[in-house]
Length: 449
Ligand code: NAP
View (cartoon, rainbow, N blue to C red):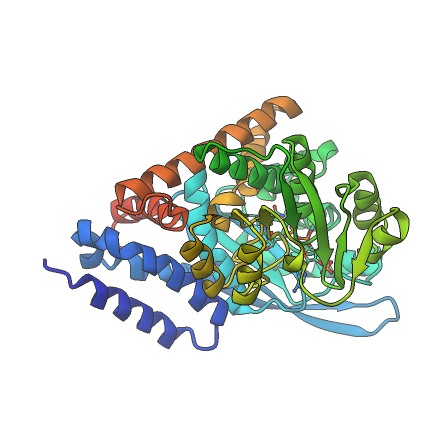
């Protein structure tokens, strides 16, 4: 069968736009992957014939549900819950839950779609899914968060299972929320099914290094990228946006690898600390007190807080955006490049806009897409599932060594695939093509389902 590849890719994208109206983030994520897949269709006409890409762009199942709960004043609150079970070609659906007021179906679908390829890149037997709610845990008491989580799980539990769908945390869902969610699952099902959720507490089925995994993994990936160019973190100025799970542990590992992180942020602004972010203070402020980032600057001599403006104005050689999608636009990218930035590594999912990615490519600087660079979290979740299944518990050092091996392996795979498909150094293409090929082969093998 002869395939007019550019026309085919256009046709697939037009159909995605038509049947998913108003889902801008999902369109963006699909477009970025499709751009890379033209080279694959040119070599594999069977994927055009069997509409493999079209099938991967359509979630296997989408669940949307009401989440009613009562706040501390007795007022009834209604939120919306989502779980998009996107693709199970490689294993049970796997991907986090996000609790943030911005959550809608388009955002959950973009995250679920990215997750398919990310999970494939880890080499672990996990499919792709994502979920969440427009619930905002910020400013809510522990009791309110617990009631919300219990109501959310009261619907979601029927769709989960260690061989079916295994959620984890994401923005707004950390150890506290995972505890309440697991507790309600256990209560309803009367089963202590450890492998049904990851990111659990260390005393009840959790795995060492899961908390650190995404941030550590992004730093290992950045290190592998620099080494491929004969460089390292040693003595480099680094900026990491966000101050949540990914950012905090990204900072920790960058410091261990010899770099200095001079700025981090939250949605209220950013702090600059030229001596290097003091992790002990940062963890106390963000993890223990759940306070705003300005409190860091109040406690650390010489640190300053900037309420408005962009963290990307702070000059650095390595930027690791680790807050949220589309937080780094074209203008910020030009500022970074103008200030001498040489590497951009996505700790968050899709934090750089398409225009920003174009700026980085044109400038020839190293750019790592999130689906490769932040895969350490889900890879370690799969290690948690392995430990749960074998009723085993690995040491911190063993788990960290595994994580490092996986991240360096993902880098090598993206790097080699980019070369094989004629775009050396283009890790976006390398990640999309390598992830897609693995999923497509399994989709193809399973027949028309
Ligand atoms: P988190 O612990 O909730 O932290 C998120 C951080 O980003 C917070 O500092 C938050 O500030 C900031 N942020 C969130 N939304 C923002 C917005 N709209 N504007 C500005 N700042 C915003 O979440 P996380 O787990 O670190 O996740 C961060 C990113 O990494 C997300 O894109 C997530 O999908 C991705 N990711 C996470 C994992 C994981 O294992 N956790 C794995 C892979 C990818 P505020 O507190 O002020 O909102």
